Amino acid sequence: MKSPICGKNIQIKTLLIIATLIIFIISGCGSGEKLNSAFDIIPNTQTKIGWFWQNPKPQGNELNSVYFLDNIIGYAVGDAGTILKTMNSGNSWEFQSSGTNMEIRSIHCPVDANTCYAVGYGGTILKTTNGGSNWSSQASGTGNLLNSIHCPVDANTCYAVGGNPAFHRIILKTTDGGSNWASQISETGNLLNSIHCPVDANTCYAVGYGGTIMKTINGGISWTPQTSGLTKRLFSIHCPMDENICYAVGESGTTLKTTNGGSNWESLNSGTENLLFSINCPVDANTCYAMGNTNLKTTDGGNNWISFSSASRNTIRSIHCPVDANICFAVGDGGTIMKTTNRGNNWVSQTTGGQDSLYSISCPVDANICFTAGYNFGILKTTNGGGAWDVNRLEEADHLNSVYCPVDVNTCFVAGQNGKVLKTTDGGNVWSSQSSGTTNWLRSIYCPTDANTCFAVGDSGTILKTTNGGNTWVSKTSGTTFDIYSIQCSLNVNTCFAVGYGALILKTTNGGNDWISQTSDAVNTLFSVDCTEDANTCYAVGVGGMILKRTNGGSIWESQTSGTLSDLYSIHCPVSANACYAVGAGGTILKTTNGGSNWSSQTSGTGNSLNSIHCPTDMNICYVVGDHGTILKTTNGGEQ
Image (cartoon, rainbow, N blue to C red; front, side, top):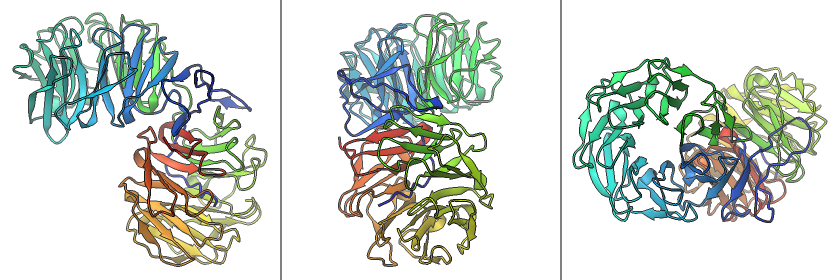
């Protein structure tokens, strides 16, 4: 069964190559700009089982918090239970097994690199006492989100804050290393995002939604609200020297400062309206970094803030300067990790590979040579099974939704924004533009048997067909103005199905000259369709975890139980109608081996949206691409 290779929203990641100690290295081949790594990924206990990252490196999940003990040893945590550790100042990052798929929001190692705490969604509290070789879950007593943790003096006494956006806040405290967590506050109030205890465990500040600032001077026995003078969300607080001078940052460029322990908070002019998620003043109250959608620095105690460029276009979620203002580390969206060694004048990315969304992948012959297409990136190609991806950035192509190579690795088509159709006949070295005759966005391109006869579908009911390899594209009457997202045809080219907005299902039996609407159990948008070579059995997937199946050439599409409410963007049955994958929002990967009677969820290791899946020869070796440049690969059918 051939893949529809339809695009909706997708990205890229890098491949694991097993050496004696299982060291992940990005290698390069081919011509063009290469996504090669200067940083190794060293898995802790991972082998090449399940789904593993190929791009970006070391991984592409959003990172929410970074903490370094010194300039050498540090941790970063984020979505999908991600915990990374470096022992060489970020030159390489080690995956650690957190034991959870929950998003982790904050990490703190109070004394040394051995004992650390991490908190996150669902009341998650994790602790390690051996440098992350093992992380154990602790009973928090809450199912609420925990956004921040701080252990001010030692590993025994710690605070965690959070709540939920529906006007509830919580503050937890332990005095026995996490064996017991007691709730100090669990009440109606604004969600808390950050806690900091500048000197000891008695005096602490917490900030959150609605301009909330709270302070305790008795170890949390009582918490006193302070007047911030605003209702903006506050995301981070830091008191660099003592309890008197503190900074807080938040939405709309909000920057606050107190010099008298919070009796008064002064609003500073940050010069931006962008979100600021993290602030760190490494040595004193004069020099501070504030980072988020904009990156700022002050050297005069906040009187003036200077914007600086970083090594990433992504949002930064956390910054930490462990020793002084010279060496700092920052993490954020798309797995961004970056470092400065000269007081923020220059930042070096410790993440390699593209982080723009990928929408489609095609491996025409085997798992070695594949093409991907997406936003801003142009077209990516690997010739070594994902070990390296060569980038062909095309000036005329900003947003490419679909790529398809019908027969071999030489001839491929891509389709995208404003009716763009490109073709290569030399394996991607040169791409020539074709005249599609439309300015509507094209969402999917498919050639059933060879490179001569192809279809492209897109917005406002657009259906195009060529029978001469794209020299001319002819518009077909679809009978709808709804957007069409995917098309699939039988090997005889006559019978095709197209799906799209508003539960749209169209069928032709005469090569696209006439299209007939079909009914199904779906009520919402369908994003992808895949059929057997004779088109007798087809699947379609879409909004809310919808999976439809059509059998025996009939006109009835019946819904199947997917077990998820996540939107599904792509379906692929590489060998038969019994064995299929479906992928979608939130890192969803589903698999069936019995024709959809049962769909099982697989661990993707990411919360990024997955937009396209392709298995070139069988169910074992498959690629998935998605948002933030995500590229995942499995060599064992995705089984853990």
